[in-house]
Length: 486
Image: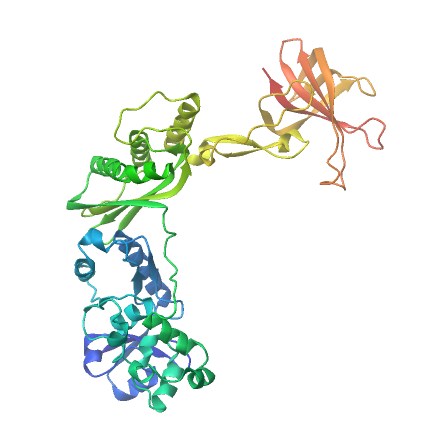
């Protein structure tokens, strides 16, 4: 006989038992000390609850093949089950009975021994799946009371100590609590007991915390035979986009970010997330980006024994003001902005999103802080405000301003000669200065005024230099090369 145990209030309790232990009457939730006293041959090992919960999260992610909303038991419960919200998806699998049977068969194929229950409320589904003797139960609509009445009080997800106290008071089944005055129970056990009862019966609402945020739009495909090849994944992606097209067109929106999930027959899930530079409903363009992403993966997606289900999630959508073509009609001529966005999409998939960036303006006088690079997939950069009247500036700055030795007249004359990176440059022409005042509100301890000059040496090379500080200050100013001009 084998059992696993974990710490709990009042002493360690059993969290799992094998068939032999179950046959002698040991059940999950028994105190470890009592179990050892009853069965001297019982072998007990500490449970790894963190590993169990991680495995259960993986299984719940796999279960999103049936519905986008899956969630583990409440945090206080042992990690041995999860919820599925199937109200809007059961018809895709032939009804609740067919969905429950398919779920049970697949879990048994993974070597598990599941109990599946479908009910109108979270509380009733939990109670029946955990404490009913049947492996598959579908509670008829409004039938929660009859389904949970014969079950023990622990089915209400109450603390073990409260269940023990209720048992001593003569409350052995949920039926014993139904219809009893609430005030004495609330005074003795708090508000949780009546709340759990009302949640199970449907008199109080209960929200579940989904594993993944529900997508704005979703399409799914089930394959008669598992698919293995990358080309099959591309065809499936196109079919998913075409399936989603009417709903997007009806709502006047297009996809800005999508998630693709391919479900393996062995329980694994392979996922891709893909962002677009601008919202699109063009299936050919989006499918081409998916192809590029798959090609960029070192070993592609691990198909295992094949994928039998594919799901496309519209994770982010945007309203489109101009008419876009449907996913199945001929493409129209693209605007310049759309060409630019598609180029960003392609480069981002080939090189990685972090490698394709644009500059976004920031409120700063200092040139090196006046813009920040952001991934281009975040969208078009904000429109730049018209700059104040100033001299020419280089399109790109040096990573850091580099010191230079400069000969210049005082107080505000441009450089006549400077040494930079060990090379002496004689200045043939100069323009400036462009004065940038110190940001004293950001750096009150080191205020500094910069005078920028554009200089051209006798070889025709142009530099952007600045003098940090003024000659009339206590400390002599320093010179730096900040950029190069064409």
